[in-house]
Length: 81
Image 1 (cartoon, rainbow, N blue to C red):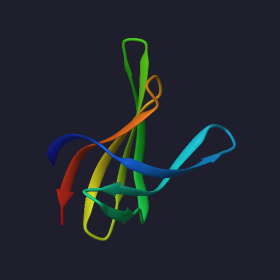
Image 2 (cartoon, one colour; image 1 turned 60 degrees about the vertical axis):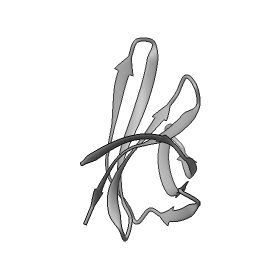
Image 3 (spheres, helix red, strand yellow; image 1 turned 135 degrees about the horizontal axis):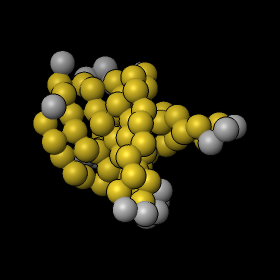
């Protein structure tokens, strides 16, 4: 997986029970529709919780990260099919 650390714009659905479901993200001025969230996990970095999502689009597999302290989102990695 190629590692990146670029901010992105993302649309998510917040479900009951504090579940977050990414729906699409905008990266390099292109909308990427998420077909599946393959895996999700949390990482504690100091006093900041980082929520990681492994998501699949038609083009690739991406790792997205939501910083709960800064309320920011970034693309952390990409693996092209």
